[in-house]
Length: 500
Image 1 (cartoon, rainbow, N blue to C red):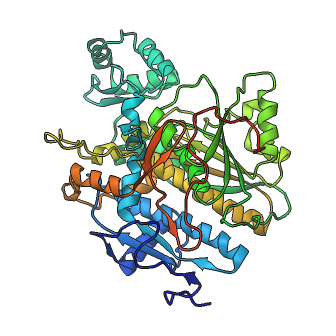
Image 2: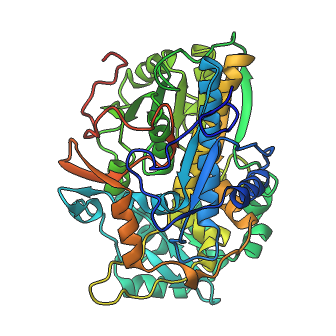
Image 3: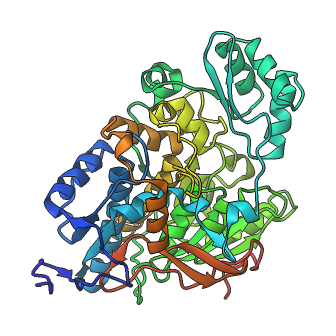
């Protein structure tokens, strides 16, 4: 089968671009980029791919960091697209041409801080105020504590653990009176999120770094038997696939949002009283139904199991064993729904002494050495926008989650079985760090130029919040354009049910 671009098996894309996305000020370097794609692919422990249907449009680097944020984001998205293409080809006999703009992929690592409601940044319209307990503090031995709490319970717990008041002076004094070892022991003993800032060599010496050193970036394991279940036929690659999304903040919901771009029916289930990061909550809600379900209610677990019993994919982002204690662990759900693809997303992985430690992207960046490689942004000049935030572990892990789910669905279609996909922020961080410091951070574009790219890759649509300005889907496909068919709705807008 010949594609219109002369590429075997691939349906071509017109040179004008897809969905109005311009390649202005960019260049296409397919040979170089495919070599880079496979270097990053193999670094994740995966076999190289052909990528013959993938066009990479490359341009300026956006983030001021030594790390290969552009290369990593583009690679995992290309792998997601390849898996979607595999599924489409299995059902139709055709492969599609794929296009990914590296600038779009890199900008999207700041997506939650770019989304706007009625012309105002969501992070400003719905702020999550920083408290004095958050930030960096110097320990007695000169090491640095990084604290990111986000939720009131973690703020209160940290103040109690340190025995201080919620003032900057009191917190600095409490940290300065203790060594880094004492601080981390205290923080971990109280089930809190603070970490000592390490370089990557320090992380590799740490017991948790050692535990994850040989772990794959995404782990896919068969956990039960079931007959093969082909992907249902439909107009889009994931039409008919039901995804039960019990995640929050950024990483987990990014994975299910990515599946929604290709036609999956995603039902996000949250608790009405749990505090969330508003920017991330809005940014990852596109294309989903959103419902409330209280697992602490008498019938809460039974209701969740009923939903899982009619799902193809069940994604949860609680710490290891948390859902198992409720009877919602991977094997519990597989017993109820043979053929399920169950996903566990954590901060620090499924093994090691920190397997149950709470954490956020910033915490993991501090612990694993990423923060030590980031250039501290200078204050912007008058009238210039601030530098973009870089949540590479959150978004990277979300994309790895989507890739793992797609690969597990392919396995389920051919050999059958129930499958468990495991990803973590720390495993994603290890992948980025494994590729090393590959850039001069001073070569990144200015914040003003970055904002121009944000505008280029954004769209404004109606939503439950108001007029929503968001980044468009990054992966572009020639036959079934990626996009969200459901509007972005408020939490709890839908019933916790699969019925339309």
